Amino acid sequence: MSDSSTNLLIVQSSLHAKSTTAAMCRFVDSHAQSLGANVTYIDLREFDLPIFDPQTGRDTEGYKKLVGPVNDAHAFLLGTPDYHGGPSAGIKNFLDYFWTEFTGKLFGYVCASHEKGLTVMDALRTAVRQCYGWSLPYGVAAIEKTEVEPEGEIIDERVKNRLIMLSHDLVRYGKVLSDTRAEDIAHSDPTFLANLRS
Image (cartoon, rainbow, N blue to C red; front, top):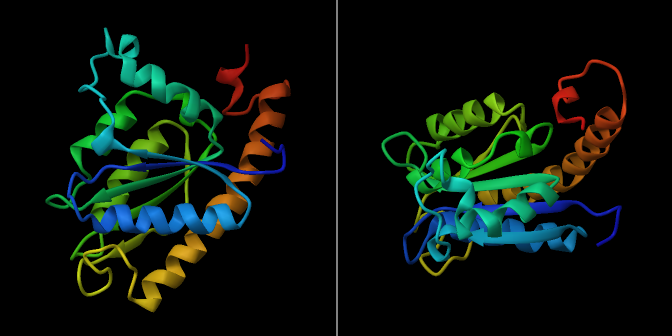
């Protein structure tokens, strides 16, 4: 992997067979790669990640497969449907496994929602903030059939353009924050990344 490339980890959490969330995640995957990013795509439908148990969770095979990509990531895209104004249990469970691994890294969000996904993405920002992560100040929401076809094509130009913007910002600012993070960890000044110093 090139030192100048952004490592983007995409985590998709919808269990729906024809998922609007997954369609948006795949679009960002493709566009981020076209911008030179190294993308790792995790679809939680295909991933055995038990409900987090703080006593045994880090001994599970699911965690052992995830921890490398999470540590290597400069930026994250979290994808979730809107369930009663909150994120899916799957994406919350993924977040429960990690804390310091997210510190100082950038997060973006996509959400399948008929209500713009605002409360969903606010909930994700709150969780990420508690891990000292940074969130982009916007996310992208889309509605099945009217903005994304059941087969996964993004048919609404506004949604498509926002996904392009999201891809660019994750790749660009994810690397900027990653470089700053590495400098701060190596430095001796009292920054909020000081707790990551060995």
